[in-house]
Image (cartoon, rainbow, N blue to C red):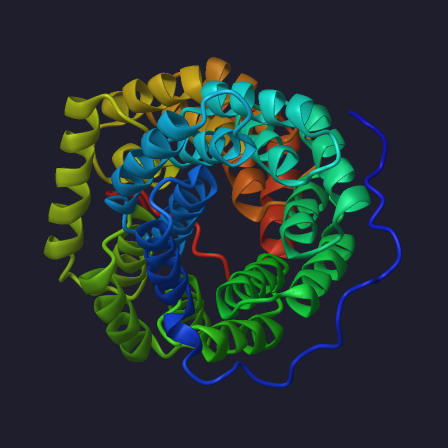
Length: 403
């Protein structure tokens, strides 16, 4: 592993006490502003590159993948106007490739952008995101460190936090995320960082602290999906199952992502609620679509197929995703799918790869402990105890038919 990430001095702005009025529409307004710029300056390649970035950001915050096609069209226009020295378009191409899980291509664009402009941060952001997903954690850390050195702002601190968390340094990750909040320029940036702070607190079993951050995310962006999911998670942990299910129902109606659907399904199972047909149907349909289209596979979909569907299909999807994405998250999903398919020796290989960075991840520990116990390994019990100690509120998914 590369050396420890250095955050540097705190140069963030004083923290705002509240999100500005109309915060929830800021990202859409940014895209609208970018579109107006292209109409006012149709021959300006920078305007079209800016539109592409705004569309990609809107896709990220609204989870609307259709915005990526609009971004691609804007990038083609920008490059048609300037194909030789167009840093904005190159970084835009990298952002688009990463958003589509084409991480090898994203890495290529990131390297090209950093060669074009070694002292600008955007290329390093593209490069860091790609390297993380390719499992190249030391290279990702180097790119994040360069971002911190050049522009210590929200984008750099958010990526630093992920590196620190996956590296087993959750306290330092929390510091980085707080700096991301304090440096935020837009409500979207603030909402993202607060939701990540909520996730970090949740992962450490700190329910009250997690709730505070999730509510701050929703104060910044009132319909923030991960803020809403976090509040539902907190409600479930406190035994308010009906409230949690109602929150999840409203969320999945708007955004039927595998993570949200799976959390809903497992909450119903844990509470003895037999009404799981709609979540099963939606997730099963997404599994069929993933098998048919050959595109990126959400790790939560792999876990669903492993636990509630056909483990062999889960292995198929996980192996395909592993060819493109070598992150510890995919390693964990592949290991679990192999375990559910009865291939425990190979499963342990991937469970160990998931643990290689030192991430204090309760679900990873649970998966590894279960696999080790299936192999009659004495350390299995220790890892299962560690999983519960890390986060006693974690819903460790229960495969159909298991107690």
